Amino acid sequence: MNRRPLPALPPAPRKRRARPGREGRTAALFLLPSLLGTAVFVLLPFAETVRRSFFDGLGCSFTGLANYRSVLQNSAFRLAAGNTARFLCTCVPVLLLVSLGLALGVRAVGRRRDGRPTVRGNVFRTSFLLPMAIPVASIVVLWQALFAQNGLVNGALQALGAQPVDFMGTGAAFWVLVFTYVWKNSGYDMILWLAGLDGIPGELYEAAAVDGANARQQFFWITLPNLLPTLALVGVLSLLNSFKAFREAFLVGGAYPHESMYLLQHLFNNWFLSLDLPRLTAAAVLTALALSGLILALQRFWTKGE
Image (tube, rainbow, N blue to C red; front, side, top):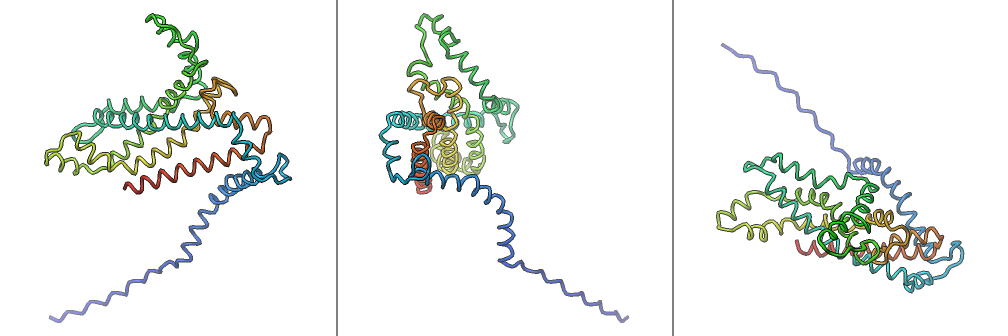
């Protein structure tokens, strides 16, 4: 019996390759609104700030580096810069250590053996994130209730037979600010650390356990090296978020708080209110350069460590 040959299939249509220039134009079209917004609201104002730092208050007469010399010789600027540097050097390392400890604790008690989260772990994670949801005004009220002259902390000290402490009128105000910053931001950094911990393959820990490595050895030889990229991210974000502590300090202490917590933000605010634009712009440029250099140095150090 003769069989008829099957009809030949039509050739598959060729896919049109997108031209590289067309893809670039499409990407640029989508990026155009963000680039315009960044240029109009960030780059152009900063360029004008740099220009005004070399001119007088009216922005007409060129003064050279006179504004920068005036800023560097100003005692209020030196005090604010020293307090800000002290605040950063104290808060950022403490926050990194506290948030990493919280992340390890939540991960240890908040997961079953199969890796699924437990209800207790979710409760712990949520409780540490609550300070981020509290408005700044409510934090200030809590701050005043705890650390005022007749606050709860002094009441507890008197009940224990100790002398009350003027937290907001002495050098203790700086440590109150440090405590508030760490308490408010530790939950956010904890989530970032948890994301980094979840990215470490579990096979590494299983292989290390088979080789006889204990928990401490696994932490120093597996966990910490694999958390270096997360450390870079958390460190930079913590550094930037540390400048937001000005809100609490300003609402409690006003424009001129105790000298131990007088930060650069207080100085900028006071110079802006007095319309001292030459020194304000020069100080802003110096702060931006110092902060950018610090971030680039940290990124280079962490990249070299990887």
